Figure 1: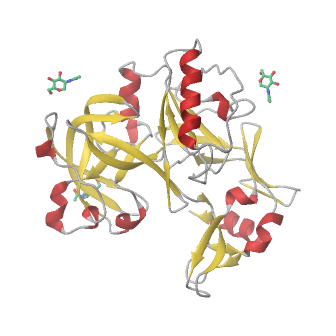
Figure 2: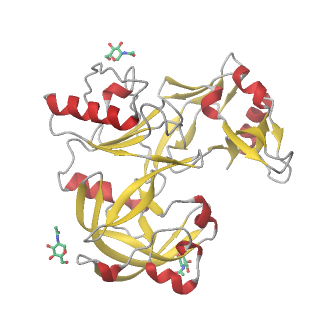
Length: 355
Ligand SMILES: *[C@@H]1O[C@H](CO)[C@@H](O)[C@H](O)[C@H]1NC(C)=O
Ligand SMILES: *[C@@H]1O[C@H](CO)[C@@H](O)[C@H](O)[C@H]1NC(C)=O
Ligand SMILES: *[C@@H]1O[C@H](CO)[C@@H](O)[C@H](O)[C@H]1NC(C)=O
């Protein structure tokens, strides 16, 4: 699930986390880097050492956040989606050139011959995502994320990937799900960081901001949360199925009593690698109609909104463990420019789509 500006999504591995709220004046005029430096300085000077590692994320097509990692020695750089909805790490292999496949187009590719720390596993690697498949070899190498280096991390060297990934993904995916879901059955990068004692707490958190030019841009924090970046208390909720971060959601409500969905509760996964908010067709169609959406012909369940109506649309509340988590219309819509209807006209896409 993709959350928007100002929303913080925190997944708690074990349910103990004490966060002291302090006020750091974040400048709204200076840039993101400067604010990160201020946060880092503050945290170094505070008593709560060791500090979590923070990785700045970028936005891909107003829809996907991603950031850099390195694999190998010397490090080869890849941009990956940090995906709580899957548990494998993979990047394209240099050998996919042979297949003239999407995997190699516009993407960095991994060359095992150039890494001193590469080890072959001698097994195939194969993951099926909703959007398509990837296939390749399993290898082991050093992986560095936000300055934290894991040795002998199992990952996929992909030689085939579905064409759609050539244009919809940065180089690869780093799964932040639980390794029971991993096709390799090996510990994830995050699990290895936790078991090697490299993090101050077994926690990771995202701060998502829509605008890359915002004073504080999107970031992934490994080992904690940044209390300066949120108000109020963190909502704790039990994971019901430890594969995805699957939780029980109480309901989804359109503000002002204009509609209740997922009535009586439903199971949901918190998926940082998905752009849209996905639910049963019956519910998403009803919700989209209540918001005044128009159907996109040929794509069942997809609706667009008149841009002028967006500021007047009601909030959508996600009720989780009795807590009301609110998205405003500016947060739950995506602005798209399309030439399909009128040349280069702007629309707002409603992100509620059917399973
Ligand atoms: C990938 O895995 C699926 C399910 O385990 C299997 O059916 C399929 O044959 C595999 N594909 C390859 C190319 O290994
Ligand atoms: C990584 O694996 C190699 C050989 O398989 C081993 O010699 C080395 O000690 C391992 N490194 C770590 C940090 O586990
Ligand atoms: C946060 O939790 C504390 C302790 O449970 C409580 O006293 C406080 O009112 C809560 N704050 C908010 C904003 O809910």
